[in-house]
Amino acid sequence: KIDAEIRIEPKDQMPEAYRKTLVRQISQHAHSEVVGMLPEANWVTRAPSLKRKQILLAKIQDEAGHGLYLYSAAETLGVSRQQMIDDLHSGKAKYSSIFNYPTLSWADMGSIGWMVDGAAILNQIPLCRCSYGPYARAMVRICKEESFHQRQGFEILLVLSQGSPEQRAMAQESINRWYWPAMMMFGPSDTDSSNSEQSMKWRIKRFSNDELRQRFVDMIAEQIKVLGLQVPDPDQKWNEERGHYDSGPINWDEFWNVVNGNGPCNKDRLDTRRKAWEDGAWVREAAVAYADKKEKRQSEASRVEAA
Ligand code: FAQ
Image (cartoon, rainbow, N blue to C red; front, side, top):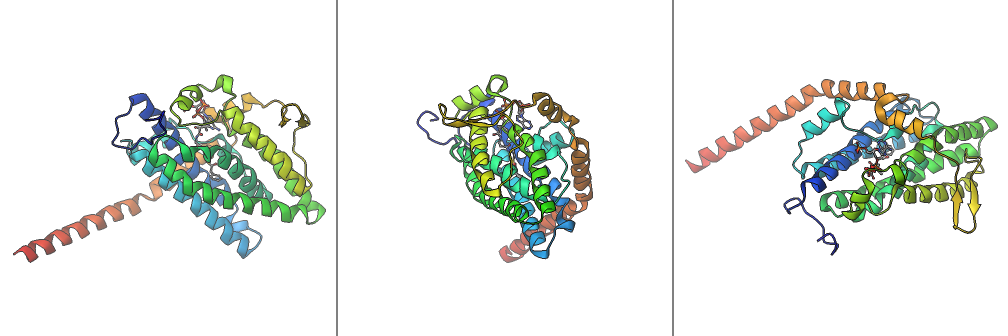
């Protein structure tokens, strides 16, 4: 089926390793969307205008929605939502390294939209053709929303880049902090990517981590010209022969440090998620109690009708 480009659906036979890989990737992706709300939430109360606040809130809500579609897609593989959440809270499950960096200025809302959503789109467009149906279908809507997010981020930076010298400097400083962590979002280099080969054979992934990272480098190198700002990579230069931009080395020690739980905000992010889960317990209990009550009322009504 995979060779014939026919989608695999939840009730189809599938190798256990294929199922496990999908649960791993889709749940990590869902966690990333949910944890990814936190860096932006930091600026909701400090957005520079009501309009900016509304836009930011709408974007954060979109990320929550993406998390929900993705948890639902993962549930079709037989894993429960509770299990996935437990794995996030215990530190067993990963989420994207990028969300362990702090948001220190308003310009960071621009950098996240432009570069983080930009990297996410490049990674996720090929996932719309993933061999597993529910994941591929969820990605279609997510990609449309992410592309809107990317444009709003770019627009924030464009306005700052055309503003006062302080605003321009704020935009550049933010790009300097987010560029390299955004490059790391694509995962380890191909030689160190333990899952890529198999995931590409199963057509979960269509392109390698380094191929997608190169697309990001090329995209940012061109778009930053419109801002009149600089990429913080002194080694970046156009390579005529390859038809791509060359880049300087990535600090892989920093990447693995963040992935292994020791980034600047890892502890804070997980503490916040755990607290949100505990604080929301009464909502979940109320929803279950309401559903039970409704079901009871309906079954009583149908009993009376039958009599
Ligand atoms: N961070 O063998 P590979 C977003 C782990 S959503 C942390 O290459 P794979 C939207 C990897 O899991 C962003 N861990 O792995 C938004 C594996 O560990 P494991 C999330 C990472 O799966 C925007 C190990 O390293 N997007 O941004 C990272 O083949 C703004 C070896 O790596 C997705 O999740 C990392 N960056 O390729 C929201 C997209 N990279 O599991 C809010 C779907 C690698 O064996 C605001 N996922 N690792 O223990 C994917 O495409 C893939 O999973 C990759 C990694 C490309 C991320």
